[in-house]
Length: 266
Ligand SMILES: O=C(O)C(=O)C[C@H](O)[C@@H](O)CO
Image 1 (spheres, rainbow, N blue to C red):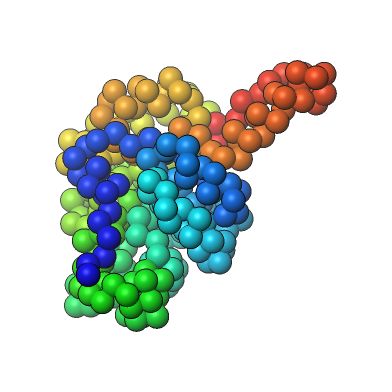
Image 2: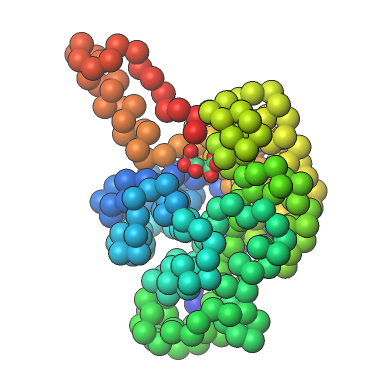
């Protein structure tokens, strides 16, 4: 029995638009709720959410029957971190701060078993193989692993074509918050200078033959990016939606701060 098909990866290959949501509550119950709301992909955020291996495992288990693809973002693209995440059953990874083709090549190696790569072999005892129920997991896993890398510095933007050319990189995600900060526009992703770089980057990723992705909390920008050819676009986060909804409800009864603030752009 082979590793289960990654329908999200197939959708990216087909350039079918995928709408996503960030999960930063680091709890199984909100993840399970989000998994029943219709998003195509859900990011279990190990970079900016208070997650650890066990909380990520709990959310993967909570999403096991959801039609949404669970995407795990490690805090950093280190081989040992990736090995542990893949073994607990993550199969779509969004790796932050990938600036060079060399880094991308190392990440491809980290998600593949030898001789193609250097992922440590522990499939026999791993949730990823359903604890050996998937007998040929080691031989079939790589085809169903989806490696997405984040371009979120000026250096990464300069290297887009070189990163896209690395076989095994399945998509390039632009991180507007970090990119704008690196450009000197911290907290101002809507600045024309930032938007010009983002729009050109989306076009370049698409022209290089790879799916482009992004996350903003701005619906107008997200629709613009989809029109430019972005394929995997995340449109919000559980924590900001929850916070905004509670502030709005309190405000309707004269409690809390009067203005109904939306989430910050970073
Ligand atoms: O740089 C970005 O933007 C991202 O990578 C997404 C952020 O990390 C996310 O937490 C929303 O601010």
